[in-house]
Image (cartoon, rainbow, N blue to C red; front, side, top):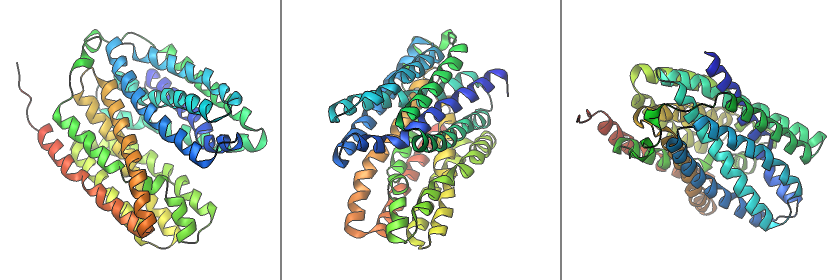
Length: 381
């Protein structure tokens, strides 16, 4: 790995560490400041939509100005300044505004981190981006562990201070590498529309992501309420995923360079119905936890290989294309959260997981159509 990519690896690790320190604790902090569950849910939903919109708009803007890494440094610096404000926040209106602003910047920083990396990677994108993106998993695990430790030992103010410091360090490292992008990628490239192959791939990601709340939201409840497991076993369903994510990012990214992006993406999308079918049908907490190792395909592989394909086809509009990937992933989860909650309330957890499996299979025809369009030779002028 070159010095530039090593710097980006550390910068991305710090970015995800900063997020990991604070993000899981926000609902608990809001509750401690007097917000009820309905208000916390409204803040979370509003901020998720605001974050998606901001990531797309700033991704587009980053392509237009051609100074993506400078923009990333500025966003990280803004996050460092905004984090301590949480110590002063109280009341629903204040949290609604503050958290929407914070997640808008945080979501943008995460989306731009991939685009910044792609500016430096021109060959073997699957393998090299996969290796670089492992920093996010490492940073997130370290951050979540640090956040839990700090809040128990020193309180929320120390959590916010640590997160702010990590964001500031990330801003410094991104700022050290800030430079004007190649002129061919600035000013006009963002106006180039994405091809239908990329659009259909994004649609496949959206459809597959509708099933994601079955893991992120309902798996802890399923393990404890349905299977009689402990809170520790519920947390293990999340703690095991980095052990699958990190090798998957490297191996699947490299494999996609050799056999093609769509073959690997097909394997990733096939893992969605397999994962949720097994989760719903298995009735032992240990088995359910083991199944979550498929996260290496349904998240790590899908993200790395999908991002590599979009970067290959987006030309100078890499920031816009990768922000749309994040938007498709997030909006699928928003839609799925409401839909799967209704299924679970009426028919139970097993039916909900089987419904999530069935829904996720609908992504495969979209991927097939994307592959067929992507394999056609482009017209020459």
